[in-house]
Image (cartoon, rainbow, N blue to C red; front, top):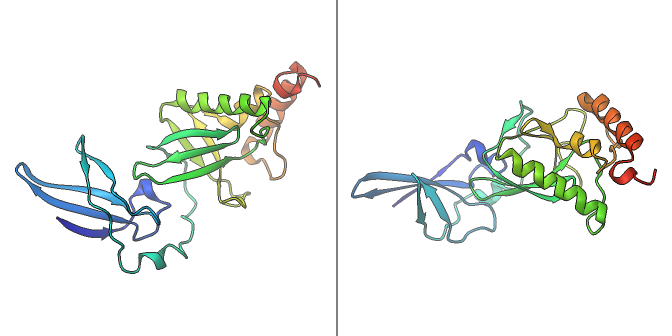
Length: 212
């Protein structure tokens, strides 16, 4: 088997430059290859899906210079919304977690909302609504940065507007009264929609505004 370091593929944009390798080997049916992600502290046996089949790969070995590459990688440049090939789950009402095809995980903080905290009834309701939107999207999820916001918050979460099958999750949460508008940062292109959604939710006494 031949192991060659390669640049991270597009669906692994958060991996450092030398965090992926290509495995080439021969079978009775001809040459085969697979891509393996070697994110920091994940040097264990991995199962890859290649040409519709699962194959077990040996324990990944560290590559020269890859640890240095993990420390100073700049964030990727601004760009258009990115269509996801990942799986998603709701951590809470305004935080979601992406698991990429390579196995890497990252968390996204939804812009424009400040959902109730976990451990409360309102927080559980908001988290369930976000989970349902993600599940119903069936992978049809895009995300976009906002030039008026920092790229990440102090917890290392990416700050994004997330569209789940045509629904801006933040606007849906505010519309249903499950989260108030987060005005700590500019609301950008969704300002009018968010303000109108919150006003309507308050007027209808939906969700967190039931007692208002």
